[in-house]
Image (cartoon, rainbow, N blue to C red):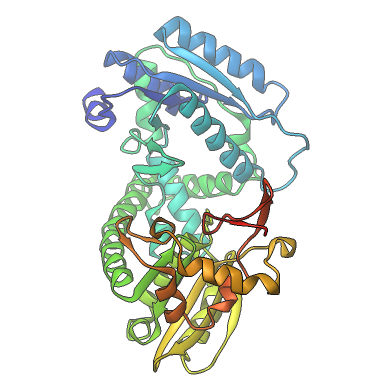
Length: 398
């Protein structure tokens, strides 16, 4: 196990471990110690149980005593009780606490202790929800969260292997009682896997192994799709600003339905600056509007305003970030002033791929119904001047 872990950890810089006190994260801590590594250990107290802080303090003292690592306890401080989607909200809060602390400490890499069982449970959970290829991937080895690289070096080990390894070194761990509660979906999936494993149908470890194999196969497929999508987006899209994109509709609808849906989903998530992509049901409705290129439509989806139109016998789809506060929208008598300002806009405010710049005048001549963009641009009064955050533009009130 130590040799396999050493190939996976590969951290040449300062890094942190997210440790809960469970077998998985304690084993990850032990392996780092055995390799002579010196990570920072971060423990999150979610305050969901009365005894949680005492447990966090126990784990902190245990790690300091046995491994001599620097340890911090991070507390989820909230004003109200969580009564729904507890695990999801706790997970989001945990990553915010962890990544914020990493930034304070100047740490770029954070390791979590997800294992093969976690991967199998995630994949099966997504299957039960009716997922596509994306959900079959489950937990990725490495992802970026708020500029912090999140690594999962324990994904190649099963929970059984981890517990056997810990026992061989006389290392103890804490079992979180919430891992046995039937009110959580993941626990139900875990029990389903155990039920299959304890039957005469198939060995439990075999189920876990096959679900992990399914994840690995899905990753290869997803990587191929991602490369194709990047190529197509570069061919058919113009990014006039980080929050304004136009799409050549005739080129878009020439693609397969799946590719069209993925391009739309990716653009909306990026332009709308959303953490999660839009739901498939909403995306399907948009797809049917988009493929009828000669029928005008306008909708809002994923914090974006979306419409179609034509210029010079060419059909376009326009996607811009929607501004929700109507009090921040520019007034009608400001349209001409702002339009003139946009024509003379400094090029760094309209960027594509960080090195190709477009002038605002070209943008307004190219986008159907461009005045809709003007009507959606946020305006604030800052130091006696009008400030347009979307464009990074300041204009005098006079």
